[in-house]
Length: 314
Image (cartoon, rainbow, N blue to C red; front, side, top):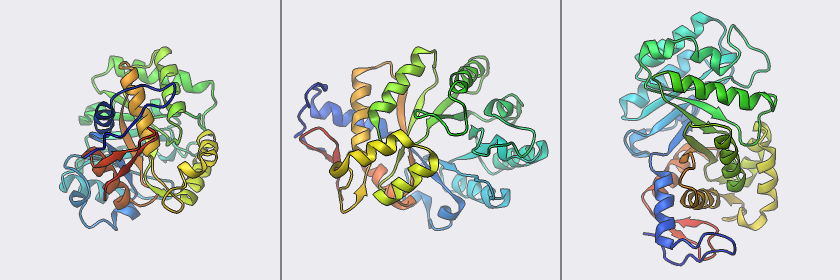
């Protein structure tokens, strides 16, 4: 159960604690999470860690093989999850590679996919962008029911800043004229204010796609700093470093409760916001992140009296 000790901070919404707790629970409803093939090999049963039907995004990083990824997709579907494979355009060596991977993923039970350009500087084959893959028509031919594309609240080291609005407009246009709905999944962030400001900006520019907020699951601050530098999340990195004691809780451990609280408040204050769900990057371990997210989704947390976040009940 949640506590009723929350007080509004100066300049913030004076929402009742029960309302804020409900908003947090709603934000965590139907959360999604990522897994690598290596992490999946350490999970005995996904159903023991996650609610039935949870969307589990399966990474496919450079150097990985289709033979390593497809069994994970098949296993997730068999265990009652919704597998969402990553399809990275610049990592695909040829059209035959794309056909083999996507048809194989579909045969293994995938009906949704994350379609991204990928972090490679140069395409390994004929595809350079998300739109190159979307425009093949293969997702529709196979009967994929939902697709996801990347969002970049802090920009991307691989995409010129001027190109980001054009790319997002193209994805909105594609979704408007096709039968397959699109959603945005953002890179991870530690700064809820920056994320909500970015969402308002792209909405004002015409975005109508729903947004899943990418957040790092509970992890050591050392791990978060490492991944932030690797992924180019520089603005949030500064926010994390400046936050000092707020994030350095549990002897150097950090959890995204403050960001989630900020997002829930923003949703309450702006009903037109396209931010509606949370996606977790399990940098501190898959099982640990899954347990934390599931507890919050079930309302097993206590709101802090100062309104800065919450503590998850053990």
